[in-house]
Amino acid sequence: MRILHTSDWHLGISHGVVRRDEDHDHFLRWLLDEIEARQIDALIIAGDVFDVMHPSAEAQRRYFGFLAQLAATDLPQVVVIGGNHDSATRLQAPSEALRALRAHVVGGIGADEATWERCVVPLRDRAGEIRAVALAVPYVHEFRLGVRTTDLDHQAIRRAFTERFGALYRGLADLAEARWPGLPLVGTGHLTLGEADSSDYPQEIHQVGTIDGLSTQILDPRMQYVALGHIHRCYPVDKDRRAWYSGSPLAMSLPEQASPRRVLDVTLSADPRGEPTIEKVEVPAPRALIEIRGTPDEVLRRTYGLKWSEPLPPLLFYRVLTDTMPTELLEKLNKVLDKSPSDKRPTLIELRQERLTPIPRLEEELPLSLRELEPIQVFSTLCQSQGRADTDELERAFQTLVSARDEDLEERIAEITGERP
Image 1 (cartoon, rainbow, N blue to C red):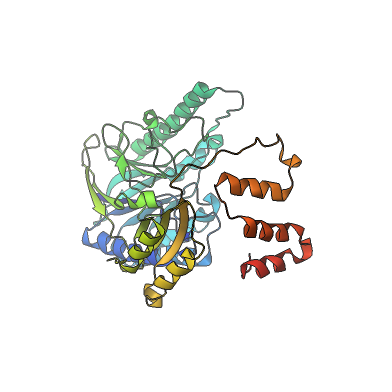
Image 2 (image 1 turned 45 degrees about the vertical axis):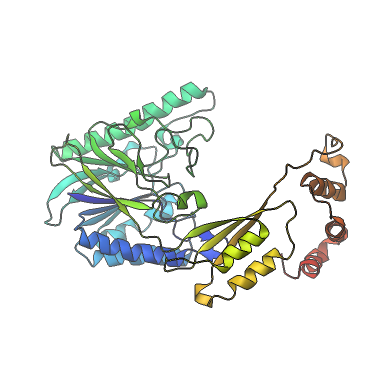
């Protein structure tokens, strides 16, 4: 029984002014080919299908179109769970219709344990035989499991979470074994499990800042493999290496660009207590996220010589090492980038100054309340705190905005900046 585990697609996501739709199209075409080439029996999408709870029509078209393409293949089934970015009701609304496409969707579960029934999903191989059972657990808010944290300290909150989430997985394992005894169990989850690395984004998902990650003790030992979503990096979370994050298939930030994007090809053991075979499959990057760091002259020079091998033009993040940012630098960079063909033009996402010398301390302490300062004083103090010496022109422009009447504020901004806010 072969399972392909993926998660955190975030369909519809934009990076600055760039929509990542083309990136997702490259990934979905590649995924379709991999499923067929590897003769996968079940695809598991472990949450955050969409980037927002009210996805655009285009993002939904991409999702439903992919499921329709899968239905035209011999793949026996797809299991989709909701993540914290998904609307549980919206994701699950077409679930009856999607059954015709051999897709089983669990957007969320309620407090009533009767709703847990739909989380138990038999998995068939390409010959039509039931070979395993999925415990399709989506993102679950603790309130749905009866956890009330109002009067609890941190340790009591941790105990309550461990107890209730553990009971959920035990209950589902009991249901699966009662119906299909002797088959391997495959769990899912969309949560922070174990200790996330400080560079992982996102991290906490339940009681942010209070309990960090949930304990791996919540996992029922009868589950041979656990397909996790939420963390965007691929790694195992338990010492037995049976619970894995697949990570996101696209790099959505510079830190994510540093680690390979993957899906996981999991071959289950026929023995329910056996160990699965796990292959990390690298997803080809359709686009690079490139950091260009240096002095103003260096970043310009590197932009002139910019090269890439990916099919889509890269997204650029500039870190300019200077105490005084040249006002003309942005214009110069865009002129260089404009020399590329329109369909191959890299996009400047971020231009950030990094000072070479420390920011000087303010000469005098600020009043205790902002109410004691005029807006121009706040602005001047900000300029001073950033070590700017030539602020006269900036302050005049700011004062113009402050003095503008509410009804023509937008026109004044357009006059000063040359564009609408």
